[in-house]
Figure (cartoon, rainbow, N blue to C red):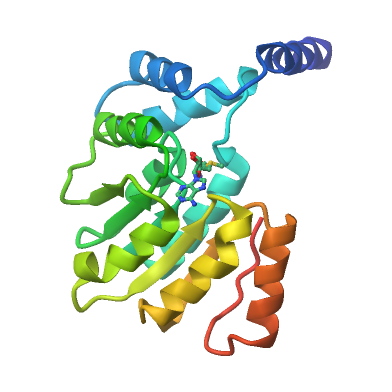
Length: 215
Ligand SMILES: C[S@@+](CC[C@H](N)C(=O)[O-])C[C@H]1O[C@@H](n2cnc3c(N)ncnc32)[C@H](O)[C@@H]1O
């Protein structure tokens, strides 16, 4: 456990990650499925955290994850929309902190990824009554969401899909009357051009939305 050994491990992890290159949904899923303890959400997250040390990954990872946890714990949201599920890391983080009456709607445009991600949510021990995977584009999902929500509105929206879609999706959520004055919005990759356009919109136009600092 000397600092030199820790540095050596860190360098090795980074080199491995570079050599392995691209994000692979099938490989991520297979690793999590075979290495985690089934039925334990914390084990699923720990396995993801281990995986992303040495493999390319789209998962938000533990640092941003802690920020997300804080928001979910503070807001105790009943209805959550996640845009961009990928392999389910963020979904698992959210689901494990939802109140018992809470439900997550999570959207993934790629059908194979949506399938694999859903399996991870089941492996983590969550039930279909706690979440619904919508295997379609964010725009399609938003246009159909009112039928899933009934009288409810969204308490929390997490955007980590395509920053170029952030603003049009926010506008669609408003048009469909799915947000309330208390709805909280979290975006990842907030420095990307599409996200900045949306943040400008929020700052100047959408007075009914709260702005929350995001990573
Ligand atoms: C960065 S990853 C999300 C990672 C996830 N938050 C996590 O921590 O595991 C983005 C995902 O969004 C999906 N995606 C991209 N554009 C989308 C869209 N318009 N609608 C729905 N999903 C989309 C991609 O297929 C990809 O799986």
